Structures are given as structure tokens and as C-alpha cells.
Image: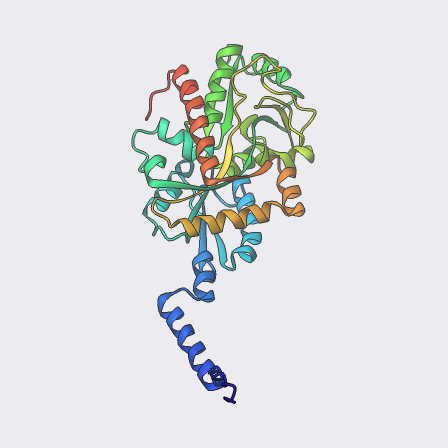
Length: 344
């Protein structure tokens, strides 16, 4: 009888062979940049870096306060150092020019509202930047409305009373502070003057902070700015917000009527806040920042603080912010042309 053939025993690698193969694979992955660490680095390109968040207005104003709230929260989400860098001057123009010349690596970003991005390029002949070609939208985080406020030394309690007071006490003449020349507040002052047949002069400041200082010191009777600029002093009775732009009353100021309610329509399209990067910034850096901002905005304490400042909080992707910016720019292009304004 033939003996049963025996099967050859499968060859099993020794522990030394397994370890050698594992090390070889890890080394190859490191060289090719495909290992777990490399993948994480590609998804988190801002981690461990210093991110500059440019603000085009002085410290102490509404935009600066918003930037500092977000910067404090973003540093943990990004795993990076986030600093607010104020570049005041020319309504944010200097900050925008700084962004244009910055390295497009995601470490220099511009936190701005509508004025610098949508309005300045329409009212300045040579702004030194073109948002359509020099910048890329990263993410939006809020909309807001501008408001008309009177100083504490002004006897008017409402907008109608302010108009009557200018006519009686000033002979129809008055000055209204604005945070930047050739801005939405200036065009609002022009249209108010036309509608109510007043001789109102828009007095430009270098940001909302110095304008607020003069209003609180009763050096100027009225001013136009964003609700975040005015709301705390309004709540403490140091000035009075008497009208707001937008299609509806604001949750933070439910007692204050809109200009549409007062008979001055055309200011229903509300401005925005967003973050922009230099053109050419890599998509992973944009995506990382946008995702981190979305997580920060989802935190109830952050949303509550921003809402208390008069913002309507909501995350927008870069694509959504770009769409919002283009629509708002088109609206204000029509309004600016209707005033007969000539770019300076």
C-alpha cells in the first residue's frame, strides 16, 4: 500500500521578517507622503502655524471685536496661533492691499464686511486691488444691518423727531458721522437728505471707534454704522438707535423701526461678513479654515455673543459667500449710480 502523501507545510514568516516588511512599508509611505501623518498634514495644512487675521479698521470697533471673538475660538480648531492684525485706513483699503501681496499659503486672511469688498471698488478709481481676481472667498459667517443713531445730547427720541430737530435747531443743516467715506452710510445720508429736503453733511471717520467717541462726547449729533458698533451704548442709554436698514426689525433691537417702515425703501439687501484669502491659496487651507469656522459658529456661547452684537449668524461656504458678495455688489451698484456719485 502506497503511503499517503504529505502536504507541504506553508511557509510562515518569522517575526523578524514581519517587522522588516512593516518597517520597509512605513519607510516607503514616508518617502511617498502617503502615510497617516502625511494624510493628516495634507488635511490640516494650517496646524502649528501662525495665521494672521487682517482687520481694516481700528481696535475697539465692531469689526475688531468680532474678529477677536472668532480668533480666540479658531486657534483650538485649527491647532494654530491666530492673531488679529489691525490695518486701519481708507475704509479697509490698506488691509485689502496687504492681503493682495501676502503669500497665498493660507496664513494671511482678511476678515471684512461688505464695504471693502463690494463698495470700495465701485467708488475709488484705483483701489489697488480687484476682489474678483486678487481674492478668493474662504467662508462667510454673518449678515447684519446698518443703523442710524443719535447721540445722547440730541433731544430726539426717534427718527422723525431727529428730522424735526434738524429743521428747527439747525435750520435744516446737520452733520452725520460715517465710519468711512464713500460708504453705504454716506449714500444713506445722501438719500435721507434728498427725501427730507435737509442739508446733511456726511462726516467721514477712520473707522467706527473714533466716530463713536465723538458721538459719546456729543461732538456730533448723529451717525450711521453697523448695529455691532452701536448696540452696547444703545442698551446703556448713551446713544439711541432710531432706525435700521433691512427688510425686517432686528431681534437685538425689536423696538427700532426699519427705514422701509419710515418710508425710505431700497435698503432691504443686508450686508455680510466674510473671510477672504489671496488668490492662489491652496484648497486644503481654505477648506480647513472654513470647516474650523463652521465648528466655532456652532458653539452656543459664540453664537449668543455674536447675536447679542446684532449679527445674524450662519456659516457660508466660500462658494456661497462669493454668490452673496456678487449679488450685494450688483444691488449697490444701482444705488450708487442713482445718487450721481462719481468715483474719486
